Image (cartoon, rainbow, N blue to C red):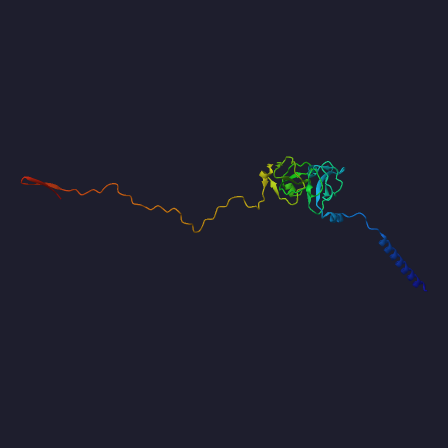
Amino acid sequence: MPPTAARAACLGLAFLLSAGCAATASEARPPGDTPTRAAAQRDTGAVDHAQVCAGQATRVRAEDQRCDDREKDYAWYYVPVTSAVPAVGAKVASGIPYAPPRRTYRASRRGGEGKGVLILDEQDRVKICVQVRTRVRVPDERCDDHLDGYEWYYLLMARHVAAIGKKAERGTFFPPASVETFRARPGGGKGTRVMVRPATDPPETDEPDEPDPTPARSATPEPSVTTARPTARPTSKSRRCRTVRSGTSTSRTCS
């Protein structure tokens, strides 16, 4: 065999051997045993989850307000209702540290199993702009402009709304997705009194009724005009009388 042909045959053989080895190595590679986050969301998306607050180091359930206010070292955990939801003070034994695609619910403080522990929250909120680190209320423009360190803070209508410059309490940075929110007047006060409705809402005033183009006749007839009767009798024409004597008789004649 000529040297050129022999060299070509060797190169072809080397290529086939390397391709075969690569295919063998690829087929023999075991699949990863760690599921991705997307796969985990698909697996948990068909089950309702309870949203509970827990310490990141201990995973002991705490009051929800710590997570509502974004306190340091606390985070939300999402426990499926197919597992036991821990009570406040108990350890979160199962759950995931991110929200599943299905709607989540708050849980009762005592915990338990099944959907009976879930709390349905559909109450409207008043929102105010606060500094995240201090929760001190600032003008709404800072949140409208998406300035760093400022976010909306949501309070129930029955709660007290802080005035600008005051610290907001008992609200949350995480409102339910299905509620309606309203802005608040700068001076603060009870939520139902300081809420501001959108300018697109019609004013809450009673509109006057339009007049009827053909008004109905009045049920009471108009009084008729009567001619007043004279209060004095007409004066009679004066009469002239004279006495006539005839012999011994006397008579009086008037005309």
